[in-house]
Length: 314
Image (cartoon, rainbow, N blue to C red; front, side):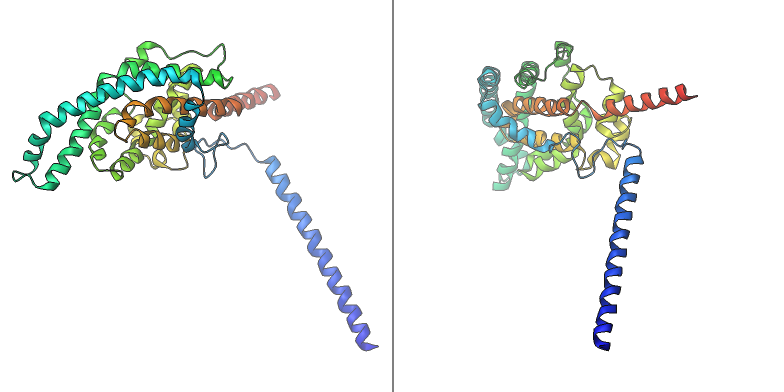
């Protein structure tokens, strides 16, 4: 009997303990949900291990390649620029190989060691890329704008009040953080690793450059562009030395890295990648539109609404 009574009391205590734990868990969950509901909206622009617009932006440049192949309306734009670019690149590369390869190898090593030939060859590739880019810069920029607009139209995201980037913008060959890009350009002589390092240094500004067509389309002021890209209003000089500019969690940095890396490949990077990257920017812009627009604009509208409500209540 004592044993049965002991077991009964033990069972009762155990049941009470479980009920207390269950009530405590419910209280904790209710408190957490109430805190979450009353918490102010997140105003930080730079994403932290999450993507602001639903998808990883580094995938858009890769996604753009099969997208172009599956849409015949984009073929003409890509074909014209690719053919023109391939012809110019081939001519420039052959001329430089014939006229400067041996000369540069001798400058590196008078005995013409094998490694001197190798370094000279990669130097010629870099020089050919620069020359070919300069020769076809304006026509390529116009083709990028056309591909961007056509892609947004295909996706049904181009609105009547949007503005196509003007031709005068295509004539501007000076990109964002231009000096840094020129200084770091020789890194691309190093196969693969050089392209990765160059892309990592310039990734945020490259992403901003490609998304500039979308920002122009919606008439986004430069101040708001900086807030959207960098997380807050910063000058180019300040952004260059700020750690968040090189944060891999920044959507524009991730997007710009892959765009820049694809452009580091010989021939393909000078001719086709700039067009497919413009298509990638359009796909990125379509997802931004699908999510209700840029986060920086939504945050600004919320701040204005709160201030209006506050003034009204007073």
